[in-house]
Amino acid sequence: MKTLKDKKILITGASKRIGREFALAAAREGAFIFLHYSTSEEEARKTQQDIREAGGECERFQADFRDPQQAIPIFEKIFAAHEMHALVNNASIFMQNTLRDATLHDWDVHHAINLTMPFLLTQTYANSPCSTSGRIINILDWRALRPGKDHFAYTISKAGLVALTEASALSLAPAFQVNGLALGAILPPSDGGDTSNIIKQVPAGRWANLDELTRTFLFLLTAPQYITGEIIHVDGGRHLV
Ligand SMILES: NC(=O)c1ccc[n+]([C@@H]2O[C@H](COP(=O)([O-])OP(=O)(O)OC[C@H]3O[C@@H](n4cnc5c(N)ncnc54)[C@H](OP(=O)(O)O)[C@@H]3O)[C@@H](O)[C@H]2O)c1
Image (cartoon, rainbow, N blue to C red):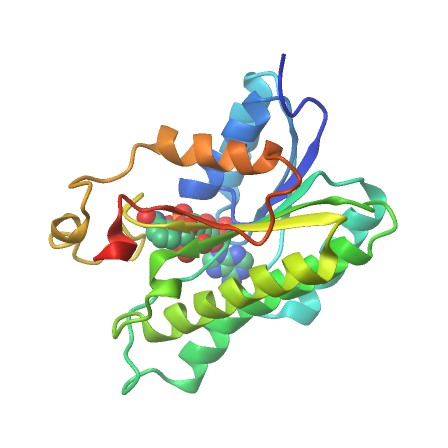
């Protein structure tokens, strides 16, 4: 029995990497995937095709989150037309900067993509007459709960997403469950940054298996309704160091 049979799930930034893994895992459990992408059209097409070849259903659509006012009407139409089982706020940018050198542009673009869009999507989903209940999963980072010196604008935007997760869980209860997945060393950064020191600081001593990630993701998509406002770390213990 497929646990998500015919459930509609919208995943942002799902063309490749972690978002693609989420999309394929949910589709294998029978979900209908609304696959958002921004620039990776080829990868989005391939993920859609892979989902369909595995017997799943998938609709893909493009939106650039740097301009939330342009992006949000695209989502309003989708939420107005479909009863959505879940919204997954996965799309993100991750750039290296510090408190001393981050520019206003760095700050604005990280906040627009990593925080403002999740806020507006949460609001659009919750206010949609089609979806009177549902689930929201915000994809976080262990750094969001242990802010440090690196990736400054990113970390602050993800810390805001932790606050959004908890405030939304309270604001939208009992109709919506809102939870977070705080990730650690899952895939090397897409910016090609140096990864040689990453594992030294992970108590588990290795990168995650993608299966460990998707099993936790599927758990949150089907978890008991009494679980809300929770943040689960999938980071091999990195947040404890
Ligand atoms: N990788 C890890 O090990 C790790 C660790 C900790 C936390 N995380 C979190 O896990 C999630 C997925 O990580 P990832 O490494 O797979 O992410 P990623 O590859 O860096 O980015 C995911 C997607 O975000 C989309 N995106 C970027 N800029 C956008 C924009 N302007 N408008 C709309 N979408 C945009 C991209 O879509 P297009 O490609 O279509 O442009 C991209 O494919 C993120 O939230 C990240 O913070 C990941």
